[in-house]
Length: 489
Image 1 (cartoon, rainbow, N blue to C red):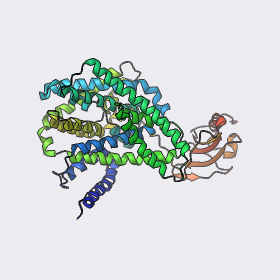
Image 2: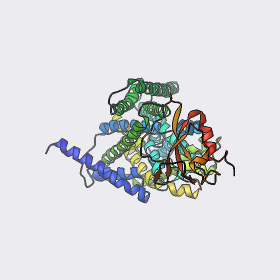
Image 3: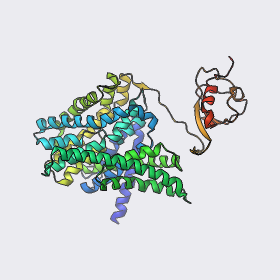
Image 4: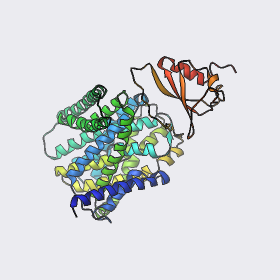
């Protein structure tokens, strides 16, 4: 049998099986990504699948591509108006917080494992960032909402702290390569990577929006091809300029997601699917890389290392970073607990391996063990911890419609969602009695899982989601009408 056919069958089977197994995550609260990782280990050379895979260079390349798409998709789904209030805290967490965590873990590793100081700081750098794939996935599938500004801060931090971890990792690898670098050289490199990454991300994100809006393609399917090429183009173009490609991709996605462009909704939905595919492929691949027998050798120090990272190093970084913020002590505790480690640290752990750094095998196995511990301990208890700290809230579910619609910036009207408030004077009134502006039209009422095409005699109920075609100048008046501000009681 052709080896390509065997490989194609194995990969497709594992992906389909991963999707089916993901149902366990939603039903029993098991982190989806942990299941993907365990499936990769079971399919590996020491598991039941007996797939022999030890190509760290290929795994690193796949991981970089996958993480780029995950960050692009995460950025596109992040609303600027939501993260703007936590921008300062997010930046501090993703820079200063990462450095504090890396330093604390580094010195602890030097004492615990007897590694050289630079090697220990390299290990701390590899595990210093929270993982965007893990955090995005768990916050969106955990079945809970979060109070206040917690969710936007956690998503902003996880999407923007990988660059600092990458910079620290590459810096210590270069120092272990006996390159002569003083503090000025290191500071200059860090500043250049951040500056180029930020500038390239915003410029290329803006160019994407203008390009897609002007190209006017004959075939709609080609727009998804454009976004596929754009993600890798942004990462590679930035990296070629010695900038940080991950930062560029995330900022580009953030810019795109907060601007209008043709087929935006279908592209974002496509990228959501791509993000899931990349997570599955990445975690399966990383699971194939590890040998469970090697993990047994570092189990005891791995447990101690993981406990220190979860209960001391991460909280230390969070507490110091948010010491001047308005976040309460309970909120900081929760932020510390959602410092999940995932694919990003494992991908970074392949960098020392491919660079031939001493003790890189120990570093890789220890990082993998830590990721398993983090997903198992933190990932499976997020919902419970949020409830214990009384920080959980009702989930803000998005309504699904039996049709697609896109609002255009150059149009005077747009289709908007309006929630009928409970206990409003307008509750129980007919559509005719709502007194909404004449140039506004209620096109659909979503009530639970039912869709209602309204007439003038249709009564509206509290909790209804009304889809209203409204003139942009009258949005506030429509909202007032639904609150019953114009009604006589």
